[in-house]
Length: 106
Image (cartoon, rainbow, N blue to C red; front, side, top):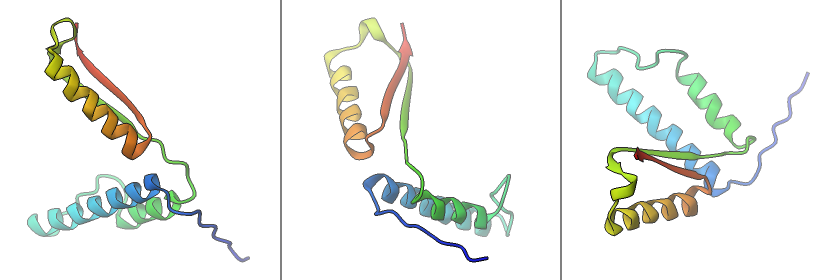
């Protein structure tokens, strides 16, 4: 039985996902060195992480950014705070085309 691999063009979202997986692997290697070979993986192993990366090109990426600001009161937010959150939202939407949600106190 032969297998066929189909690779879709890299989009900004799939490039970002590949960078995130690469970053996670780098952190895992550093953790293992720092702890004398203890695996940082609670479930799975490095090959599972790379399988996610490899299959990522075939999947539609969706990003959901959630910001929790419990010290921020919605009714008392200053213009400066709202501009900062709006700038963060614009950045997230422009770079990931994902959703953006802010949770704060009432």
